[in-house]
Length: 403
Image (cartoon, rainbow, N blue to C red):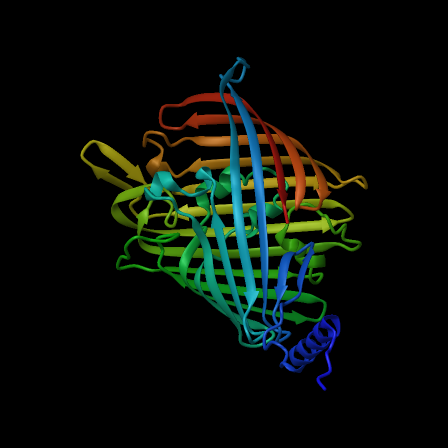
């Protein structure tokens, strides 16, 4: 006699068998990694407890309006712009000593298209190996160890942009090999950085027969800043004790192809140049004072092609700025910059001495990740060869949001 099993009992048994079979399957070799979102961005953690990938992005919007002249305040030009839109990836791969960094830029004004004739999207792409706790080496495209304000990320500035001194004398990014060594001696810390690079800047199309050599030496006599505060503007950490960093360095670019070495329009003939830097930053209880000096020399700075002239921007510049962060995260700001071209290039068309003073007010909503800033500039321009001068006013408003 055949026993009939009710359908519902059969289905239940089948379900239990399937569940048992699935339970017997080995666990996936690579379960989904944990994802975190915090003040450092989006972090994806690998299953080996070492590998991780950090993703950050930011958008900076700027409005600027410039007057006709010092006494004629009618608007000569105005612009709304996406000044920066950046995507940044940082990671540790398999070994805690192996790190990788990539940064991309997508805003038109952030690609150096006018000088490179292509959309220069790639900003950083380098790999770092931590040889010892004190010594690290990198290879790829990265910032050279030049002036402090360039080494401070644009996302960590208190103003919407860097100073005119940085614009004309910085050595910015290059492709090459980099070393960094740091050590504490008692309470003090010193840092030595060096690089050997192509000398042609970001994503060079072709190489030449010269290299760039750059070094930077830093001394922090009262120890390290809180959270690396010597490389972000404004005393957001409100240092309870005085912190000071002083630094000096130089960069020699042999047979460079551009007016600023790694930046600027193409020269008509190769020229060698040397740029010297000195800077300092002081912070205590919300107050920050920073200054930097730059000086560039070139044995024969002017190049010509027919009636056209292009020159290495030789000369000197000084930038000083100060700020005070209130308890409500408002930050009054002052900045003064001065640039003087070398005598040899003072007669070149378009080259002028400038002095720029500004007063600003910043508001931090989430540190440097979400912030707004307003500035009023007065800029004086002097043609030293013709002994003429002019001036104008600029109002600039900026806002930045990122993770």
